[in-house]
Length: 96
Image (cartoon, rainbow, N blue to C red; front, side, top):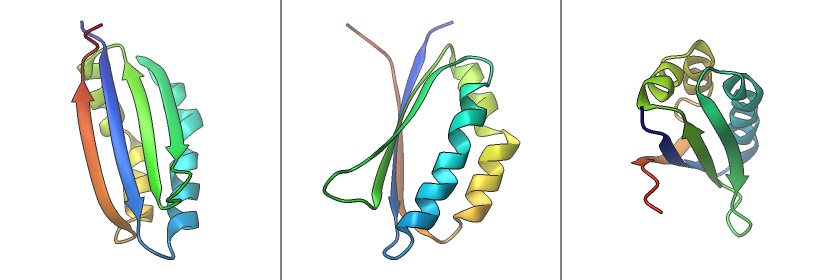
């Protein structure tokens, strides 16, 4: 199994920053307890508070896939439906 790094960028719509932030924060403790989670760290841009970034490391892509199908992630997606302006996700591998 190869470790997988995930970089997820989430941009909240104007006026929805606190809602999106609160929902993202709810994911942290539960996700950190998931099998295969090495770290799951949420960041907020100092110059643009609507921009959030998750930096995640997983023991394998299979562990991350299980996370993506988890109930708490489904609940997050339902809670922020229509409140996120942009979302990008990069699957990355450490090379050095």
